[in-house]
Length: 248
Image (tube, rainbow, N blue to C red; front, side, top):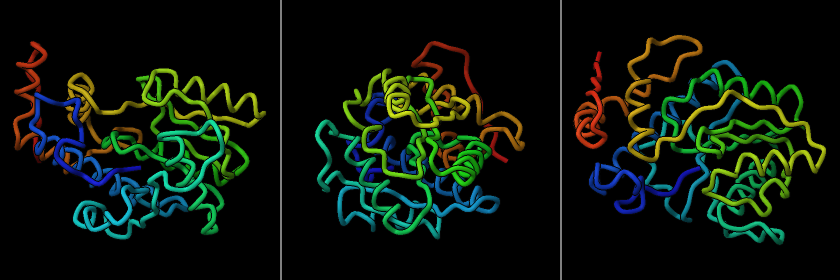
């Protein structure tokens, strides 16, 4: 799920740590790494990566950002939605419905803010949905939202009357799934990178050894952080010990 990149529209909560242009470039690095991560996951599970984008006609803005082979599906909230579904919920439902209409057995929606999400979580989600398409797969975020939601049908009620951009999103979604008697299974929690504290966590995690269950190495993000000197800025911004990024 991603909006076309643009200064002043991307990663705004990282201001004044980053300039609007730098925040946009960081968001582009996130997309580059996340689509590459999806392509990696697709080597071991039946998965076709798509970018669910907005606004309409903005595909060229992503051409040099996303991994080759990534498809596009419009998710701009332009399709009619049932009562009670608004904002982000309309876009999420649009993406699910559009991809299911193309013949896919299940759809998983992924955020654009977790560049180092372990590949194992992506393959686990795909395997869970392949095993039983009637279930709902939820990847909860540490901020109370979710980084992934997957389903084999377009359950519109999962997006109805949700307090988007709040710490209640995941709990409200769990409650809604329970009210619909849906089989909901959860992945391990992960985090979104949208402020200085979560960016600090990302820098720390990017230094961890690689491995099957380790965070994705996020090479583009890692290189940008080093080039711009974000670790040093964070040290001053958070008044914390400095972080180092090793570029191999």
